Length: 178
Image (cartoon, rainbow, N blue to C red; front, side, top):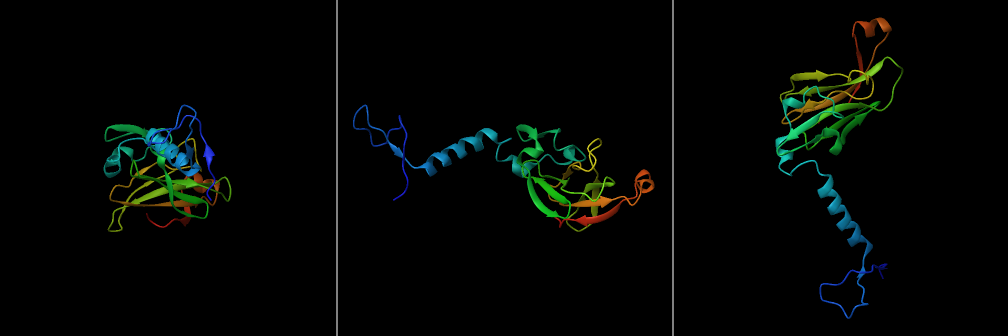
């Protein structure tokens, strides 16, 4: 028999047997209702925004601080981000609402490292590369528009401080394209 909890003040749709009758509710039903309410309250915009995305205005913007206007709503793209792909030291983060992608560093060989996101056309040509956010080197990259495009995240290392001064990166690991 399933576990039941008694909740005061909830009455069945069929009516009640007097002022002291209480409805028995299943914990799963309560959790489902709470999740539905949370999804509505936390959603950054309308469902149609997922087909719109913020497009090129989101290119080279910080996913943590840039307020994207999508459809009739606005918000930060990191709020609904998922990890679309990952490999050694880097994840490809993707926002379905903004339809953008960026790289997030998950580990390091040393202080001379960072991450970047590469945006590709569907025919395989490189469209753009966006590097670490200035001031947050080695944490995450700027965003790339991913509407109708592909993206991959890469971890790179500088072989020396001279290479770093000349921005000569050695790309070591990249995720699959998404």
